Length: 402
Image (cartoon, rainbow, N blue to C red):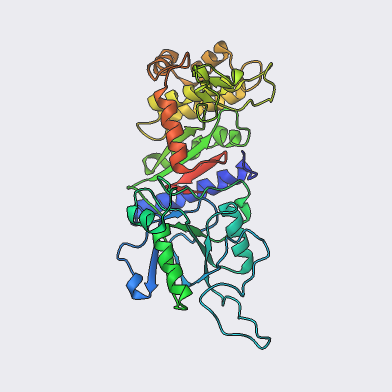
């Protein structure tokens, strides 16, 4: 999937964000390494010094550096229906002149049940109802929480909390949202169902893992949206110097999970994959018989990973990586030359990269032939799952998605 945001806008947003944060680093401003916090202030019996474990949505616009502390109302609904009944839920309110319960009084944080539709749809409906923030109550126990599993008599549990990823339509969401673990959410539900007011605080810091700004870009060599950024952002990267650290990531599809590798290890997805169906990419020109193949994209992805490993990973600037990417886009980014070795060698020459170093890196990581595991591609797939990347391109600054 690809975002509709223009890369000109992303260039501007990312440059401004990086420069502002770099200034804060120089000034010595401090921030928590954790980007968000969830706390219950009322009743005090639910207060926890370290706050509550939660998952933060990868969509919406959190007020970084600020907080939202309001009463929470439980919608008693999964909020999948766009027609939200604001007169339902808990705690019970007084009735108006027509005998109907008063709507949730603004400003408020709304708790809704997980399930039935996407996280984005729930938060969008809550936003339209007037909520300042949303807490989604998980409905499944963690397998590690034996007390929860035992108390709920559930045969099904989950090994980890799900990632609150954008489903591709979350660009209109302007309020923040968290996912709260079932055991904790159940306690809040019990309080409000007993008609007790509960005050919750959602808080955000601008995360700063160390004394520099860290920013990441997730894309693919065939992604048309990010090409402008990759061609033009080198000057900003160099200007930031050691106050910032860039990491480019190549998005690769897991062919094993996508059933592109058969039980006998055979590649079931034609030329979309390498390594007997292990690592795959979509066909850029939607023509399996001609032009650029998915396997070509995977190969170029691994090449760029290796270039970064040898020319950018140490300083986080990677002048040669930017030069290579820009030169490749200018010289080889077309169906005739994308997978042409001579064109790639020409790009190496113009960007000051030693091809033998890159080729050795590709081989040493596991290569792209037969049913071999490639270390670098495995690491990328693991990182994209952990980060919850589903939209391309995606940029992060200090772990916060833009």
